[in-house]
Length: 90
Image (tube, rainbow, N blue to C red; front, side):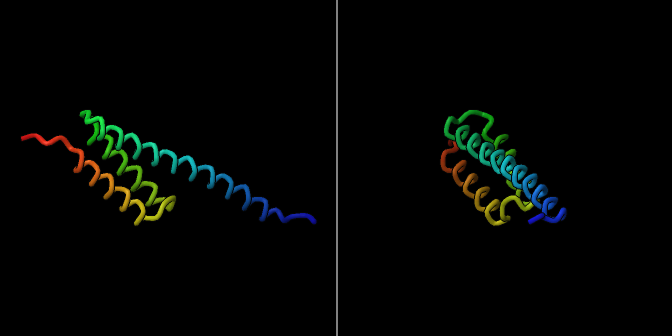
């Protein structure tokens, strides 16, 4: 049975979107992981990496790659993690 051209086109589009979304999710996971490592190591760039991770989470949520509540939850947990392991200067 021969498939219609529209079905084949839709399959190609879905494959492209699936690949793009997979790459973007990987970038988000990497940003979160690097932020957590930096916080635990207590180096000076953890706040910079936190901003980068939050930005990538917001972008992914805006594009529909992850749900907006999932992005908010991950951002909240990262902030709590930073506050828990932050260096106390007093």
